[in-house]
Length: 338
Image (tube, rainbow, N blue to C red; front, side, top):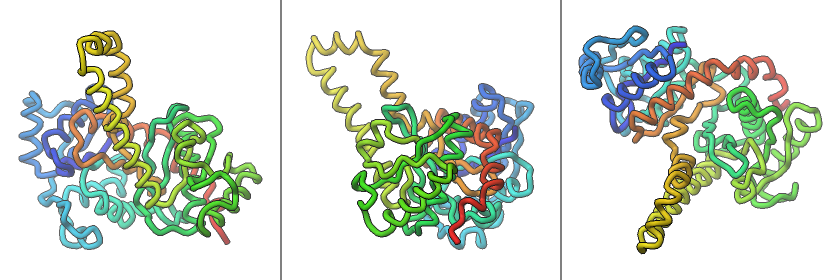
């Protein structure tokens, strides 16, 4: 399994990107192609203690870099030799099995749509982050790629999330919930009500396991394995979850450092606190898949450190091995609204 890594994307590139990719190669057995300015990438490899490229690690030269301020709609015309453009063309041409980038989300989404392209019949690609819940994990689809959606988009997001949960998260019969302001079928705006009708029909046909509308609090308590949302509301939920996690950890730290008694208590539950912190840490997931693209693409956070990049490469490897894209291609006719 060969993973293409945009070595120049992200706040900590190329150092942390290269270090994380090398760690993924060593720990998870993923062959990697580091795409970027060859001299800088090789210097980063050497700074990781490698005098020579390990077997299974390659460097592909790309002279330009997509900056965060670049216009996503035009950057691939202006910077055809950017690490992101070169990597996406390699992915399209079958030189790698998946691509990971911590660069601009907008540019990555635009490039993935333009170069390897969406699966035929999929209207819009969606971002599908995996989030922690009381039930284990759930996939949120979409979380920001599409702020304005139609009922057909949300129907397809439900299928994308359901197949991803089956193939990658290994959920045997994933429950699909429509994120809404109430559980009743008539709740929400016109988009949610029309989508509810489409998802109900898909559920009755046995194509997905639709459990109805779900509110955000019930979603966090494990009420569904797939949370269907437009990108606007999905992004708000995701950022609220991330902020709440940071807030809780900060407040817990204050409590445990407040007195000698609580410091002793902290020592007794140190391992449990570490497990809780790990559960809420986005770097443990590593990256978010772009669902609906014809080849596996994973977006790592812009501030990713080496550990997060290592996990993002692992996510890309799991995605490429899962058979998810073949499932979507085989069932695309069920996902269309006539």
